[in-house]
Image 1 (tube, rainbow, N blue to C red):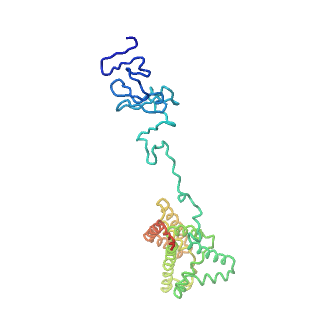
Image 2: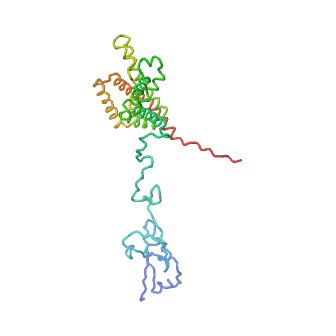
Image 3: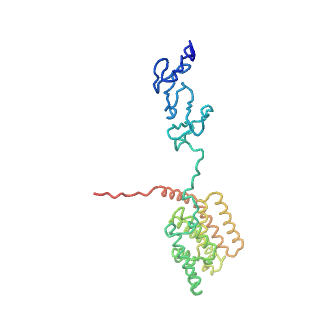
Length: 339
């Protein structure tokens, strides 16, 4: 019969030219009806609006979905096996291996993390402030005042003040506590002394790490112990006849012992690559001064004060950990209760 395809197997279907129209084997064909295909199974809904709506066709289990949808890839995209274009009205399919932690589909390029505001360099923190480092700030204010007195007051008055506040043997025997405190209110050599710059930088850094009261403890510990370690041998030498009686009234004042002890304490809180260069540089400077033999008692006091600061490392590190733990706890916020 002309235009008729016959078959005897289960995978053959009798189709007449009219089956492509409204009739299939004499039965009217409805839009969306299921049509048998080769190899068994059924084809999905068909009709003029199926492909335009973007509905998928079931080709059997394990078969990759391919939809002949018009799009920017052209009519050959289906045969080439290209991925289905996405757009309005089309389903977006993503493999589970492309899913990331922060969203349904991981981005191929990760954004660079921006540094936290606290990690940026802040040079102004090298200087003391009345709220951040009150001990160093107000102590520096007193030192500036006494330095102005030393610079502009009458030399005879300045000499009398230095002699009265000197931590010599005679004053230590009569009034040890007042003289030890008063002698630390002056800068030997004025504001041009390297110990003045060391006072600002070292004590500011140390106070920001362990607090003002503990910084004062380290400073006074070095100042008092190094002073006693240098003046007591002088008194013993005078008693035994090794030194003249005038050595009991030698001038001894300034902040250098406290600064040296603070340098030794601060070194324990620095990274290793800056800790040992700091100690070696400062220690070699003190040894050079001692070898010059200009003021051996004071130079020995600087080395003793540095050793005292190094001896405080265990305590300073505990104080640092306690300060960090205290800063990590958020402050309690009291919520007002309304009656």
